[in-house]
Amino acid sequence: MLITVGGAELKNRILPLSIALASLGFELFATEHTATTLHGAGLRKVIALNKVGESEKKPNILDYLPDGKIKLVINIPSNANGVLNEGIREDEYAIRRLAVEHNIPVVTTFELATAIVEALQYMKFQEPEVLALNDYVDEKVLRDSEKTTLPGTA
Image (cartoon, rainbow, N blue to C red; front, side):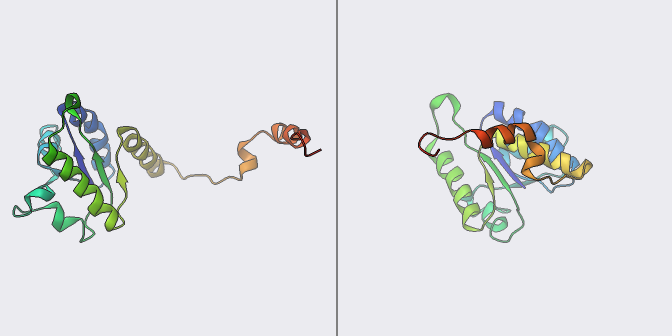
């Protein structure tokens, strides 16, 4: 999984999710500054990748995304104080675009990243139970709704 987030606050917020992903056995990649934050938190196995705009530097995202080494991208756009460096914006866009071109799912919000990590944790420790829709909804509610008619349908 590639993790790339902007701003110190978001990097700190993504730490618990990254730790959880590592504990679930996922190989983590990150852009330079995100990797530095993750390394500082004790995640030593995070592989730092250079940005798309730094194609001459290796290892680079351009080498890893097309080769299928990355299966999910968590790329939460930065916007520090409403001011965003054009180079950063272009690099974030290039990462998302490249991932989509190679059919790699892209997560762009912290809330969705959190939900995915929680689902992965649940799946590791508990077998999901598949139920019919009727099993989720009280049968009485279904019976009552069958008696309700819409205007003009009676």
